[in-house]
Length: 399
Image 1 (cartoon, helix red, strand yellow):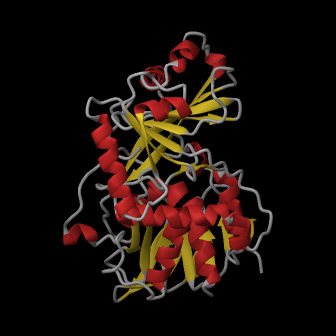
Image 2: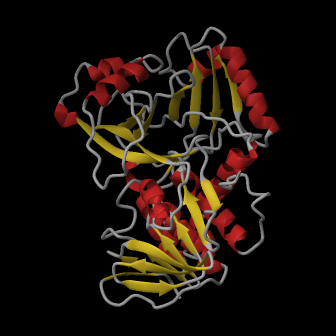
């Protein structure tokens, strides 16, 4: 039976699993859980799926990380995206998959050595198809690059997709029930074991629940008396409307030094840069007001390694630009929290993706279900909350 999305009316009195949050991470969790035989209900307090942060991202995916667990997660997820309709049992389902690649460039004096070391580490971790490009080769293949680019790394199977369609695809491919306009109000437990989820439309009896509420996940966890290492941080996306100087077949192009990046979007482009503004953790918000200076700052940053943006910037007007803001659900090491939430048996986390929720959602959903069903122990799970107690984590920024 395909997944159903409902608003209003009665909610189920019981379920094997309740997922709190209807973004792409929650929908992917529901897909894998229902495929594993769990009677799954997703509750989403907004009037639609993927309406908070999912579709305010750059909707991109890449396997070019540095740590083996991140690379493995993204390779698995990209494999799902590449065969999305077949995996979901929805042949021909279109998520507007584009794979022009990701290109990381360095302009540092020691850039050639830095990029070579990065690629060597990635290949050792299993990312065999990442290419190391010399300065001349990078500019030959991508002539929009600045003349002082020292080296680059490229992977052709990275890219972007339509996250709204992917979210609804996970929902349609599942057998879960998605209850919109339904807010989580608390958790019921006995002897530290979960017994139910209280919602604005009644209580659902369940032995298991997953917090997948994006930037609101910390607040939802607090309903169970839990505090998780997690914060909501504002991030921006600038959109540039059609311009003839934007190379439409270009990959996502990223500065290794600053993290500033851009990619084509039809005849226009999207730009992002997490370091453009001094953003600090804040309360999660339904609506996040953007800062218009973000566009000018980011245009200047991307112009350093893609000089055509300086020419475009000189002719832009407000009518040519859109600026949106959402929130990353950040953890100290920019890796997700997947697995037991601790404190209440049966309560789980699938959150804290630190800007990588779209790209990591398929593997993250699968990993969580494996943990729930005992196929993977918390000790084997590199994204377990308990990694902070074990040590070995390190703080790092997220692109």
